[in-house]
Length: 636
Image (cartoon, rainbow, N blue to C red; front, side):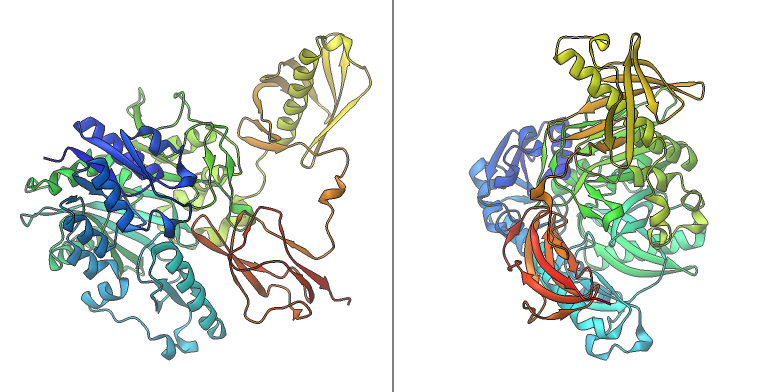
């Protein structure tokens, strides 16, 4: 019997595995980098071991350090989570060679399926040879042979761009997975990403636990997932089950895994088999009423599975909450997560709660209020899962929970998730496809309505706070108009005998104003606005994130025209070959690449002109707003 489990991962999945271990009476061990010294997964573990450094390559990707940590902490088993070392056959062997239980598939199965090129060969599919790609083959997809999560993937629509995208994908894959092998395959436009959860024991039993649809993706990384995949013909579902079970049996698979397909024109195209637990596994757990981590542990202990899996019930949907700005190229965000709370709960954590109507709301997260989001790792903050009797009920409830969540701190994709779930194209399963964001992103990222009234509430909240700070009431303050601006919204108000009076925007009556809550009447409708202000200058009013606009421009913020600033904190990983000051560049030309949160971000020239300065050096770490280069725009 397993007594102590070390999780060779961080964040949300480590917390998720720890939860099941606690329920089973199994002790837990965390590993952590210097950047994660006070992370939630460290706080929740019974013991923890430091991996010196911050970069993944120096810490979580060091299998030798992880095995040594397990032995030092007295663990007798290792769970790899997902990502990092979860699909590394050499790591699995090292765990076993150290006398530890490996909670995953046999190394031979990992080798057969973890490399996407070898997996395709096993399924009788040959990838394209990069040197043989022609215009007739376009578009094609450059893809990392190892790992997942959208890293090391590039769509190529121009043959001249293939060489550069191969190099970029290889560099990103090497950084994320320690393996720079990439391959090329045909790219299917706007298909549905459908996958099958498999679970196998060491006695020959293979379960297929339903389908999942993961079509809503950005940068080839999933955003919203659901089970079962809606609207698929029964015959196609049977085919997916059969092909998935056959793939698992062909490699002697043991444990949890996922077989992924791209469905287009009624046909299922094999993508890959992920030899690990998937990020989206909670939707399968909720539909089938199982704990996949508990089943992984049981299988690792040699326990046989029942002959048949449990029957499914209802529909589950999951949304990934990321610290990123969808309106600015999905730029990752870092900083203090001041508050993370969801309706009906005092805080976030890997817990489930059943609502009176039978709807289950579950939050899996690796963060809590007050935690710092580091630059080195994935930008996912939490997964919010809803299970209900029907798809429509689950979608509606998930949108409601997200809309009313308190997510205070850096910019997130919360508003995008809400608008996605409420979009008519998403509500219709027949229109699901991986091109959803390509078609709809501009509309989905428009500023949400009501921001002007949120700005009014912020201004009045600030005034109430100042009135209390200086020991006076509203009547003791100046009666002339006060002006405060938040983003594009300017608020004007003055102090009357009975409290503040809003003069702009028009039509707003102040019912009550306190530092943390403001009540306004607009067109006869009274609404309450909860207001939270933080020392870093961010203001959150309900779902609105505001930033106060300074009255005067700081001279230090003024930059030379054509300055190219870092849109995020990160590390300069590459500069365009031969690029030097004095070179002529064109608008949109890639100049350098930043790595942040395990993703590589291309920084392009903002205009056509002359590169007059280049401050970016490979290996240099930069903060957001750092000057990277200057392009003097050519005069027309």
